[in-house]
Image 1 (cartoon, rainbow, N blue to C red):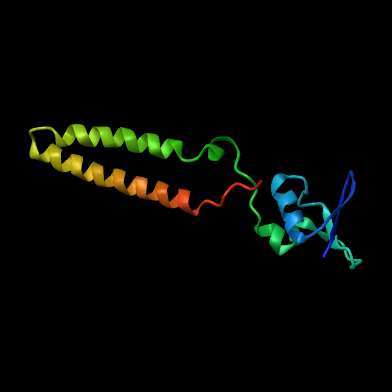
Image 2 (tube, rainbow, N blue to C red; image 1 turned 60 degrees about the vertical axis):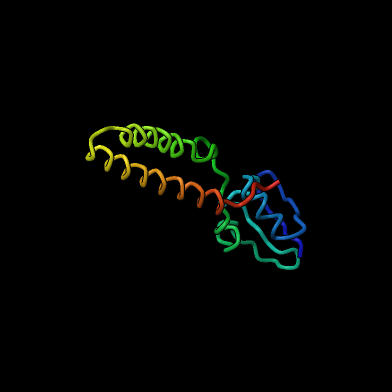
Length: 122
């Protein structure tokens, strides 16, 4: 089913709703643009279509670079944990072990989020 998108610059025809969704995610179609099926006469706002409303815009800025801040923090806390584990005091060793467990949970979170992230769209 073909779809027609009406923007302030004119009308564009897309072969499928998936193509309209890709254009929406890339910023070519705005939420205020109007969309209709080629066989229909009813125009709807792109933001009101459930498929497009669920589509996420691509990350930008620091969010697009991944989780580098979390990983950097984990490396720093891991180095601190290692230095505490190598001390003579048992209290400091226990604190180092607790910090190592914190690092483990942080890196597990990073791995889970990286695994869950969808592949980049071409």
